[in-house]
Image: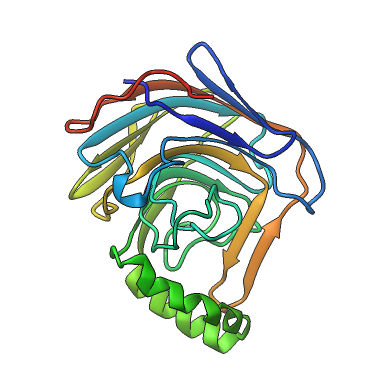
Length: 263
C-alpha cells in the first residue's frame, strides 16, 4: 500500500511525483535561510490522530545526490515533536512533545542529536522512545529555554533529558548516492532495521504510537553537546536532491489510504 503523502517545501525547493515515488530538491544557497523539501501524511492532523500504529512494515528504495550534504535528511516515522519550533518539518498548530521516532536519519557533522551512546551525526538507523506527557505540561518550560545558554544548567538538564528520552541507533555504512533498499519493521516490543535485506539493528526501544510518516531533506542543524553547549541554525548548501521509490507499507491494523500524492 502506497501512503497518501502531502508535499511541503520552502521557496525554490520542490517535490515532484515520479512513476514509482518522489523526487525532493532543495536549491543551493547561503546559511541565512531555511530550505526544505518534504512529504508527510500528518500535516493536518493532531498528534492523537497520526495514522500509524504497530505492527507495521515499511520499505523503500532511495538515493541521494551526494553523501555528506549539509543539514539533515531521512525517512521514517515520528511524532513531529517540534510543533512550535522552526524547521524539522514542525508546524505551528501543535504544542511541543517529547520525541518518539523510528527512522533512517542523516545529520551532517554540525549536528549532535544524541543524549547518550546513540550516533550523534552521520547516517544511522535509530529510535527515540519517550513518555507521552501531555503537551500542556511541557509548554510552561518554554520560557526557561534561554537558561540553556548557561553551560552548567544545560549539562544538568541534558543528563535529566537522557534519563527520560531513550535512544538507540547504529551507523549505516553504505554509499547513499547509489540505490539501496531500507526496511523498518515496527512492533510494540521492538523495531528492526534492514538495509538491502541485511539486518542492521534490532532494538527493544520501540517508539510510542501513533506516529506519522515523513521523508525530507533540509539545510538545518541542531546540537546539544555533552558539555552543555548548544548549536542551532541553517547551513550553506549546494543544490541537492533525493529520489525515493516506495516499495511496501503493510500495516496489520491501519485504515486504508489512497495511493496518490495530494497537491
